[in-house]
Image 1: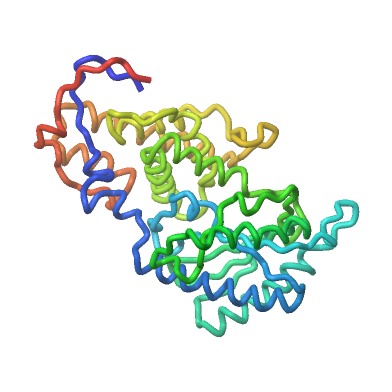
Image 2: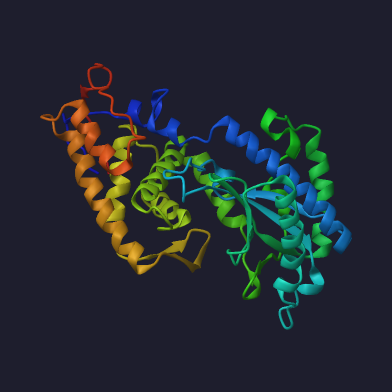
Length: 367
């Protein structure tokens, strides 16, 4: 998004993330919800360790994955039906089931055990429900607002046995936080340096599917591109959740597109950076995007979602552009234009009277 020299524009950083009642503050998961999540995860791990150890003679390892791992877990927009989705992978050494020539059905091996253990735990703890609806994981629905997904992975026995040594060395220097006391040390992906990872699938048995590369990629994105890109991921996910009450484009697709267009922090503020993101989505030429960690793999969305994504992004781009640059609009009127697309979690506050916020900038043209 090019900015002309001497352009006067509104700045919405206070509305987006700087104020205590900002849009980002409404997206953040509350401490009480995190306490619930971590207590439940502690019980899930304990039950699976006890049950799977009894059955397989090996205690599983666990790894937080996805949005919970790289800081993009949002409060849902519409409850119900939307829920927070916290992912924790469960890894077991099942080398005897990993022969590709004759793979033993994952449904009859790993899922059968895990489903029984978790369904009994849900009933015992009086959580909302247990679901087998997802082909790629076990789902524990804690309450109306939160569920935990547990994908099941098989890894080589010899490599699995090295995890304990690596993890033990790190525990001594690990600083506990109050919310993570029950999970002990959160391992890094270095602890999970397996040469082969298979994901249990309810319909297709074992599938080659390794979560490590994408998780590591987005951890590095946050490290090198800064906090702004994580906020943009969250804004875009919240925008999706406002436009699609159920389903919609996957978070990983949205993040890959944003990662492609945002090369560094935009010093002109989050609204200008978000405008750049929306422009990219408005002009999408394909519903497929290359996996940033594997050029041979495509991350895709449905044709219907692709068409709708372009339309809603274009409409939001037009209004956000107007909100930023149209000087005849008051601060409140500009906020209403943004709120139309993000919902009432975006604050209707005029922060433009602050000289630091509304100012004439003389800038080089940026792209």
